[in-house]
Amino acid sequence: MSRPTRWRQLVQVSLLQITWWATTTAAATPPDPALLAAIHSPTRDTKFVARDSARHPSEELTFFGLKADMTVVELWPGGGYWTEILGPYLKPHGHYYIALPPSVPADEQAISDRWKQRVQEHPERFGALELTQLGQNQYAIAPAGSADLVLTFRNIHNWMGAHEAEAVLQAAFTALKPGGILGVEGHRGRTDQPQDPAAENGYVRQDYMIALARKAGFEFVASSEILANPRDTKDWVDGVWTLPPTLSKGDVDRARYVAVGEADNFVLKFKKPQASRKQPITK
Image (cartoon, rainbow, N blue to C red; front, side, top):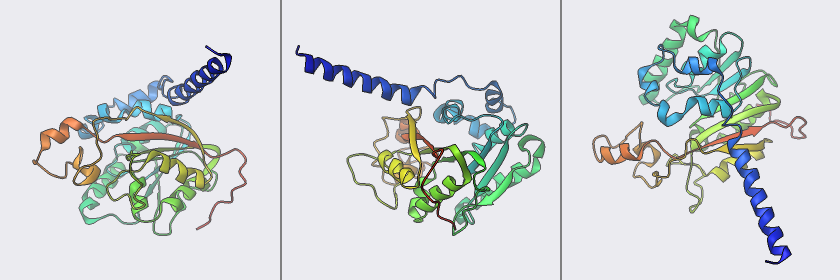
């Protein structure tokens, strides 16, 4: 073997090792016992608990670097899967903002109402959550430069469909402290097809998401494959909603879709630079 060929192989191996470290080191950090206690709390909704095996909450939140004394912003909590974990965990020492959509579709209103009722009826569990709004020209999700961590789970396709993805990411950038982290979970699109800018099937290419975040001023830190699902072929008749938990086709081919499981999802970690030349867009 010639010396140049051997050198190229060594470089390739080193690059692979660096990539492995970036995608696994943070996820391998032992979870905070207090976080595990929040996840295993008997007060959590049993429907949410049933999804833990698909959503891996301790691994994902640990990958994002969540700490109990952080100021955290969650964007669009939906039914409250993550709120039931983050609220009790942050209550003793942290600060928790929740950015709600200004309005929700009629078929989701009951879910939103149940979430609000649950957190309002149990302040001893969730603490004093600070509610803000995100969308329709309302982007003050937290005081500028106040947040350690901004989190969003499976929402990016909604903002793309509403042509608000760039504004939402800019709002996250503005809310974060220098060095603060943006954690994004999303339905991962196919790389052999161009990205639909409106993400009508619910899927977003991982490289597209990274480009959106970089455009907003973020640095890409790492990715995790904890929510990867190779069974998801991403060509379903109703898009991602064909799969659990939505199961849009009802009983039609239900066993097939249940066997596939929840969608293939990316988990991406970004950082607001310590010193940024980018001037956030004010709304």
